[in-house]
Length: 465
Image (cartoon, rainbow, N blue to C red; front, side):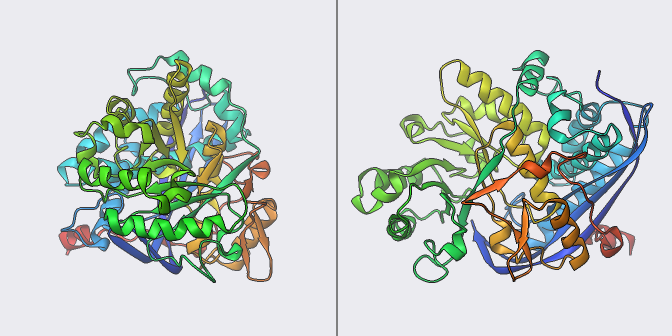
């Protein structure tokens, strides 16, 4: 029987994050953006109160890529998503399981956000962040780890939001999980990143010994092919078995443009170093075009969705179009990741190949990277994009004492090699041992007094003026 809880309070905070180098993906370049922190206080039936936490970047122009909106306006959309979710969650005053809370609010969240012109992917951000903090508090209240708690279905996850599954599918999947002791990093090569020489793809100081690489695409088949050929030459110099994934972030306009790129990969000898290493292609086309475009013969190359994963029915819908995978990101919802991993396991048992990947747009050192890493290790993600260590200098503007507290509590994940505390990567892997701790993959919380309250969306300020 999953424990029941009542929400007592939800508070949002933020901290500025400056990037060490520009991160260009799709049509946007990020040099800085705030990091969100969530603090949730709950009362667990028969066990008293507890406080939980979660964190994630407020990334512009990813959740909502509409060209008429500025980057700041899309961040405001995420802030509005959080505010709407807070109101819906706190309105649920009775005792219920953690998943009850999520499931009873997600429909109203999507509908309310739609009325305010917030797309579904951005709408899901608010519940996703609250759910992590609530789960952290619940695990602390019952004094168990994320891995043990989820195996026992502490959150009470059922199939009410996934009609293609049965409750037993989920509980069986959860009970059978054996968390991975390590997860390989997949090194991101952004569109503005150096390819050759010092600071380039083959520079060990940059790639941290990674055996997996995630290469961003621009949507121009000729330009992408030329750049991939350069990257392939660099990968050949590493002298080890490396694999790659490609990510277009919705930049390929349609199937014709996508076919042009894949035809080059199939037939251009200069692209053989990429083609022979390729695992899958991520979110090639815009999310609305994706749902209307069966892949046909292209499906043989292996495609997954990311930005098009904006609902619980997204994976079954794109499976019918020829897609074989879907990304797990805690910013899109940990419960949806678990549902999709259950689906992948069930469908693969039927003889086909389906999988869930680990992609990282929003995870910085500390809470965010630990919780997302634990989620991936639990559902069986063997390698995951980890770009926070690459684009941000360690813990960034986090107070030194807070960074030191995380490093002391999780010494297998962080180390100071003379340049401040940074993510510690062991032969291309992140270790998960210290994540087996009471709570959601963290022994410590941020210094709440060092954070500022989440900024109000500009539109709300204008209404109140």
